Image (cartoon, rainbow, N blue to C red; front, side, top):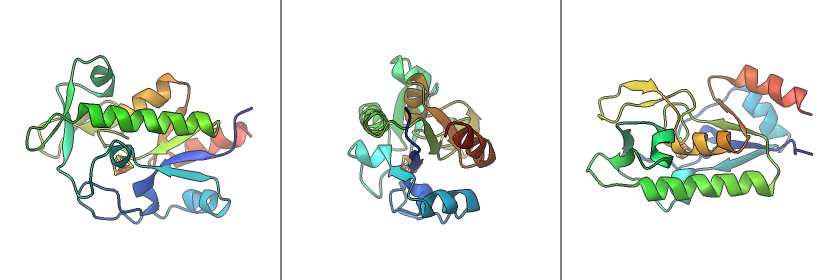
Length: 164
Ligand code: SF4
């Protein structure tokens, strides 16, 4: 039976894991309630993939998370370094954690090349987004985890309540 635990992007809980070492204070009441019930398991796939804080910003070049897993696109930093392997490693660690805790739902940060659920940056470092999922979001969905972003919390809450 799936557990009630919820995987969540660590940056959504204010942890210092973002590429620019700037913490986001995301205090939605639904997240606060899950947190008060000790249901949230934070992960940062980029840090778990051995990238540092701070680190160069990275985007998916010519594709999305699906094409990265098919080796048809790469995750590259603004300096041109290929960090696809680190992004995949971090995604695999996130998947391991969902299996360990029998997690069936994840809340991931929209627009990130790892965590984005519906949109990611377009690979040109212009601040523009395209439709597509990040590397971790794809892997989790491919393994049956229901992924929602912080912009879909009401839907996530319904899913979580139905799954209890
Ligand atoms: S969006 Fe995902 S990979 Fe990026 S800092 Fe947040 S948890 Fe880490």
